[in-house]
Length: 270
Figure 1 (tube, helix red, strand yellow):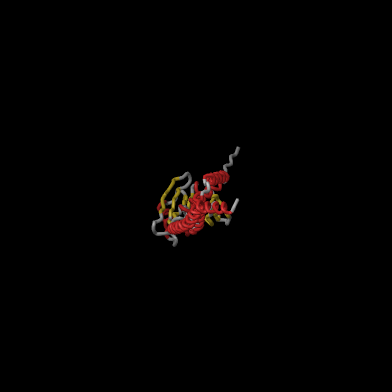
Figure 2: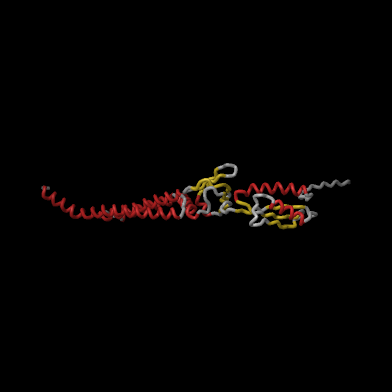
């Protein structure tokens, strides 16, 4: 092959592929600029939504890679490279990964839902999946709780997001439900006044909503009263234990009996 043919082939390559290559370079840099602008908009939207910081980083990185993969496919198509098989390979790989990681993807989706809808946050006390504890950390795949006896509980986000969740600290106030049983010969009015005094005299029981004391049940061996004070959520257990103890002492001092099971032994002479 002589030099003239080589030069002719070079000119052909330049004129045929040069414009495509130039266009691909332009598309690449414009695409990167558009991706940068889009990601900034996504970041601003996530910041306004006050989403979890780990969710923000994850979503931004995920979108960044997705946009760049799409941009690479477009650039390759502009140059003239067949992208149909490339897209098919990506789809097949995605399907294979999805089938092999079904459980992990369910936990991943559950973590995203928890971070977006926020049924609880770090520091809340919740009950879910038969477990009770304070939320220590919310991750993409799992949520970690700290139990009252200082054990770490790890719950997969897939099951957590699809089950019932009781959040004990989502509101500023909580109602304490107490039950007291007294003997049938007790004075109802006196007992109600005594129980109400125990509630209203406690400094951490709220005035509004007002505490309630009512006769709840005429049981087999006792008259049962319910006492329902409202307290700040942080004071719940302190008030609960205080009122239980002070009420027992007040009932004893007033001579009001709290019934308890008795065993009666009968001896018959034959």
